[in-house]
Picture 1 (tube, rainbow, N blue to C red):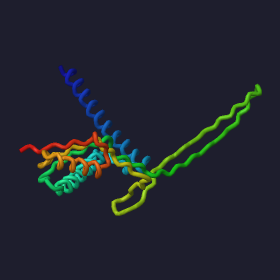
Picture 2: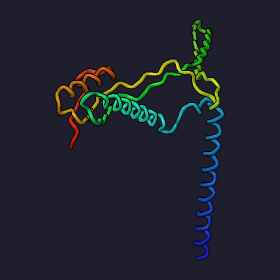
Picture 3: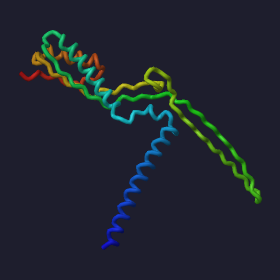
Length: 185
């Protein structure tokens, strides 16, 4: 019975030591990742990129609701806009290419040429009050997938057409992507 307790304690001690080693080793890899990739903090690992898109959607919907509510015959408006893709950002890169060519001759008269190319890219950044920020070459805004407008007064065909035309003009979308409905009373 004493032997069984000894084995159990030994196994428990080994498990605890293994867990401590695993945690300390994983911490070393995280520190090395920060040293090897100094621009890594430029990539946001959270889902805030998606939050910015939702904010843009909300802002666009609010602006559209305000302007549409000013159309004659419209009392209150609700707008929903959906997008095809997320916003795409293209950062500037500093690219270095090193090419090395080696010629080898063997004793039988054979000849071999080996070319090695090493390409390195780093994101170009600028310092500001928030820290390092990437320099962007271009920002591609998302394409509108569809728009739904629900408004008081949309029962009237003239008002409905005005709403439809206003949305089409502001968002520059084709007509089949827009739907206008009267508001539930």
